[in-house]
Length: 441
Image (tube, rainbow, N blue to C red):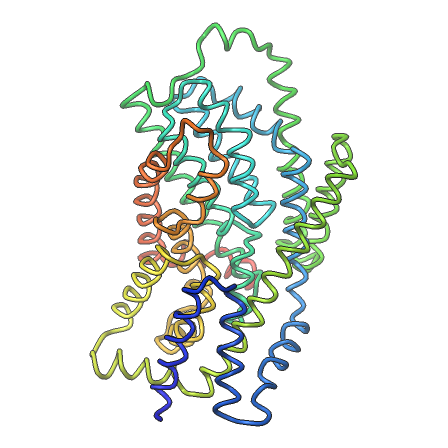
């Protein structure tokens, strides 16, 4: 059987097994090991073991548990409470100010956990009840929280970019720096959209009344400004030595984790229960990602051995006669379609063995493409029927917010994300300027 047919058989078998509801890493690893045994016989099973050794030797992977730990300490110790109260007081006079403050809150939370789950939990438990109590439109604020929490997989320290870095064999530090400006760009577009919409229709996001604003003394405003600055201090303490070259990425992640614990202790909120919950969740998330990376490396090794990437390149370039940009656009469209049914990690481990090498062959920067992939993942997080954030919101939202409200809420934010994706494609330096500046220096 030709190698191309074997690759198609592997891919279709994997998709079929996923429909049975089995875990992603189990399906991918199983197909990889069975295919390697069938193709190369005795010794083929060593692909999995080789991938394990490669994974264990990958030093930057130590950042993964550190940043996951930070995120759960932030969430469980309620370090974001004062931060949201600060945005509530200072942004209240602006049309849609509390919704804008929620986006800013999500940006800062994203800068300390790397996962959308923590941002969603904080937004749904802290911001959503307050926004509904202030008579904000339930459909709009539901979309605000879902879109804002998705920033966690783009703004560093993004765990998804760690996963991409391992599979694409690219430096994590460069990928994180590449994700910073696009993440801030997307957050800015969200804010502009909210402000314009609330200016046109003030009832969607009413401002705080003059009477309520006058009841908050200036001393309280400045106290909240100081208290809400704690996450900013943690982020600065963590990232400044890394950007200046004083510490490695792993060392900075440890500094960030220690600083977060110190902040929780200082607030008097680092209890035994917080420590136990945080440790258990960190272990569970870290192990899940390590299994996924292991399975993806094994699957990719089989595909490399089959020469599937060269066959796909020949099909697109030779048979169809497509140019590099046309192929790139088709790849992004395929991600959007798959995102309606798969989560971000499943999409990456399924197509990375095909797409990542092809992107390199076509002459595109793999750091830049990592940002494109991550933005597409953000869109996938919000697109039905799978939409990971849609399910999270449904589980956390009050009863008055229906699944129809949740689906309606994400449409304008998905369009904003598509706009951000187009801007990064058209202007690659949005993603590449910062890593080039830092690493060239």
